[in-house]
Amino acid sequence: TVYEESMAKISARFETVRNELHHAIERNELFVVFQPLMEISNSGVAGFEALVRWDSPRLGSVSPVEFIPLAEKTGLIDAVSTVVLKHISSQIRDWKRRGYCVPPISFNLSPSTLENVDGAEKFLIQLETYGLCPGDLVLEFTETAVIHNEEVVAENIRVLARHGFRIALDDFGTGYSSLENLYKLHISKLKIDKSFVFKIKGSVKHANIVRGLISMARSIDLNVIAEGVESEDQLEMLREWGCDMAQGYIFAKPMLPADAERYLEAA
Ligand code: C2E
Ligand code: CA
Ligand code: CA
Ligand code: CA
Image (tube, rainbow, N blue to C red):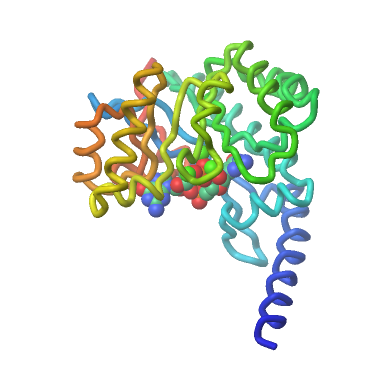
């Protein structure tokens, strides 16, 4: 049947990507791009988000939307995270050495990294190995349906926060993130997912939700970041509602380090 054929195609693709990703890690096919986070009030650069990219000689460019969930399912995510952390660390060092003032870099922390009781400890040791200090990073954490040990994950986040790392709750509004966790987890930033931001101009309901989220977050002293800002209209609405920061194509797409450094200032 058509259904069986398409299922077979999906699982064949999964196997191919899994095998290739394994080699990609060893062969240095993964790299990192940087997208600025802008202060809405003064258009200053408040940070960068590090986003992983993969150019495969056999598969072409593969989106993280495809290979990150696959890496999480197949146990390759820790290896991917290590590559990303190494890139961030050496980029920060390079920029500092060349006299730039480097704002915090946001790193997408995989929830599975924090599922074991010693997850935070292991992660802290890794950060120390790469010379990454709390001030260098913001840890972006996404709640997903597949988190197994919610209590363990929450405790690990508290440990990271106690060590001084700033935590941002990522993809807020996408369904798994809950208001309860704004209190339970020690987070200092809230990122509103682009699927909401995309609709604030066209849908009164989405506009009201986002405006409400911003005012609620600010009332408990959370820094709010809107992701996926593409138009002046969206930016103007977010500014009016008191949103702190914006990230999106209106400012810049994720860029290679050489292009990203135009957004940096001399220290
Ligand atoms: P995310 O963490 O929600 O990252 C934001 C995504 O929105 C990025 O997609 C970024 O390129 C995209 N984006 C930013 N501004 C705009 C805009 O104005 N318009 C549109 N259409 N898109 C915009 P990207 O780079 O494809 O990454 C997708 C997802 O893959 C990320 O979503 C994150 O969940 C995951 N990911 C990316 N890099 C890493 C990584 O190093 N580690 C882990 N664990 N996950 C990663
Ligand atoms: Ca993110
Ligand atoms: Ca998102
Ligand atoms: Ca995410």
